[in-house]
Length: 274
Length: 317
Image (cartoon, rainbow over all chains, first blue to last red; front, side, top):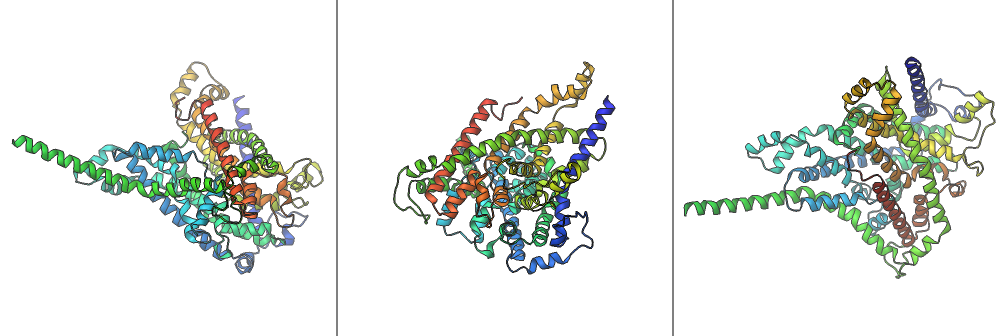
């Protein structure tokens, strides 16, 4: 009976794995095919020979500025990760370890902002950013997304569990709160920084609504906005759309592949699960 | 005298230390606090003002209209339909995400080989964007033409005729497309959260239960794993619900097209897409902000009800 259960479990597991891999396989397959091959009623499993020129043609497409999109997305994603982590980490440490009177008040304020559904309020946020004159600017694309209450709270939880003995050693050496933070706590916080940082990276790279609102001019289109124009175009060039989508997905797939261990560990350690 | 002076000296030093501590604290939290004030609180305040004004074609305050925008949006059938639609969508989405991610977590945890491989396979779609997934779903897997993978497989297996997956009212097959794409993108993340929760359960509990005669894996799951995942479950359901209510990108990219003039979107239009059309399409910002506040209020109420029903997130199970 147990044996049968185990066989069923593994068959189910393999079936699910094939199901989950199929879309990624389709993405790669189409990226290397010509349009007639993709839409052929005669299904072929592999692009033979692979049409690598799709990638060259992608960057030569005058309607969709893909190269510039990669430049924009890279700049936005890296700035967002660096700034967001710096702000959340610093504030999280202060909330966990610096005994100021306003500590509880500030924590309460940060927690209260977590109740506000960020995406649902995109119209009021857009209205304010537009009033500030930040539409079609790089700061409009980056700055509103770098203040993360949830990650700040996660950092606070992490630093609360940080061994005090290590910090006391620094205090004996005459370090202040900021010195202890930057020299002792921060270098030991890499697991959580990588865990939360990689989630931020993927969210920023993949975000669609905000760049669609703020980066209206073609020169501000991100990778996702560029790809979306392939979907909404009158004439769809499938091979270019899929070549672009493949290149757009690749950096995050690689990042997640190598960082997933940290993400899983970060979730366990900080108790993201509540 | 000397002791008094020393005590005085000490209290001066202590006060200075406290002042330094306070200063350090504010220096460390101020970038975040200022950012949240400007980009989370100020939009609420400014947006609320805008919602009380006509504000059409301008993001400034033009002609005070009181609560007229709220009255209009709450009597707008299309908006109300979008609210009903997103509730139905969530009622499907949340339990399905929950069950599938829990199932995957159980399967992966009980795999006797290639455990890491399976976990990676289920987790990787989390790295893909809604736009890219929408492209794969709409242009390849659920393309209405016979070359679409779903149609091809159903032809090979059942000799079934090709279906137009997107764009028919009856049966509403676009539901299959929209729900499966979100499941594929999300369940890996929740699976990781469930696995983390399972690893927190002490081994001894299982051993003790086995000593007491609980033999089957189902019994162990039913009486130990599942009840002890209570907090994890609450978190997963809450997070998933918040995400489902704010669905936008897959609807915009799967149903929205220039060649149908957005007609497909009226089949299944979530509130965010409708608000996008009002605010960005018609530039009717006053009404758009009013609609955003109505939606946010609904979400906050739903969140509070859920945490009341489940006894709050923080309580230990």
